[in-house]
Length: 550
Image 1 (cartoon, rainbow, N blue to C red):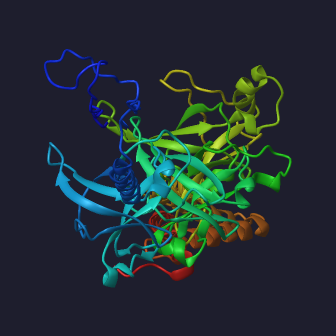
Image 2: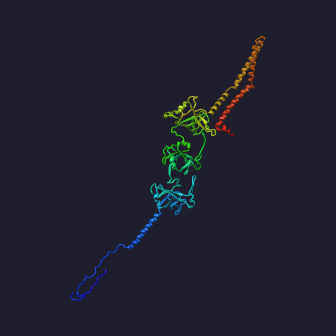
Image 3: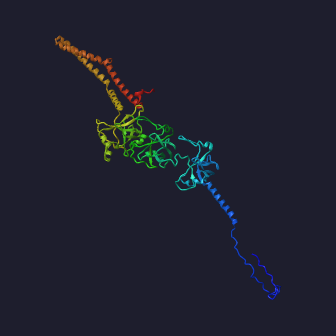
């Protein structure tokens, strides 16, 4: 604002402009002042404000570009280098390792990595991480590209589970990823056998899946996890049977030689096979995670199982060579059970030994109605003449089995109840019966008193000789008395006959020698039968290949 100027005053009566005259100055002609407010913020401050916003945005964008920080617990950090090792998904880099350290207990390696922001919504509890490096297993060869590029961490993102930033890496790359169509199933077995992760799964010798894991449960059962890919997973139904198809199924038993294998791969690395009995397409498909029993063989898987079994004991009065635990029990060729136990029992008091054979029989294999009839079927058959008998199933293997059949000509039997288990009556085998008959004949021949018979014959001949001498004297007297010539001729014939008998019974006579020779041959025949029986028991195929050299 400008200060107002003071006008000069004129002289006269109106006042004097001189000082000290007392005149008042006039302000009417002075200009009016205008007041304006000062600005609070100057426009000059907009420039640093825009610069600050731009810097913040660039910092936020840079932070977003860096991605999300995560931690991965791993068994080992082999091949992982901080600042170099990448995280890849389908060969696309989605992250990088920033730090590698140990956990508090020095048991695991904790890898800190940063993943691009595009993967943030997939970092969930179901997301999988694993270390990719060269791997050579019986079922596959993978990760060879890392020989030149170095190891990297693989990731398989998931939309399932809760968002998280802490993960535990898999010990091995997953065989089945989340985008593979199919279903997982669980198999329960008593032993893993030669199965391993990656072992193939077959359906009618077509590879349809693989083993993806296994675990030993608290009950000592092995739980095997398999994956069957689509559309073959629909072939798994509630009545499907799984069996171990590893290696070669070579069996040499009472039924002969049997060999079966699924493929060359299963021969080397093992495998699992499955099928449904009777191709029953109407059976309901099994849901995912369904539990099945893994049978040791196809035959065991499709064998009809009966829940009700009865145990009996058998006592054979002959050698049980060739009979083993698991041998079949048959009724006229149809399997009705199996041998479950064999042991040796000694009786020092009577100086005897016997081998009780315990068998399990499934009465439900006989077409009967209610349960009461099922429980009484074995007792009914024994009353009809059923006996258990040992038979050789195969001359090549020498394996024996228990055969049951009806023998109506035998005396009626009954089920023994004096022991811990009921006892079924037995019958000797055909070879055992022949040997027993030969032994009885030999025993009877040995009991014949040949010495006493010879002495009695000699005494009889002496008596006949004395009688003949008396007759001769009588004939001489009769000749003088002219007795009938016919009587004389008869006496002469009797004398000749007695002479022949005496000659035949002489110590060096041919008849006596032939008799002794016959008895010796009968004894040799009995002993040969005994040796033949023992040889066949030790070597059933001797009839085909001959006796082994000593």
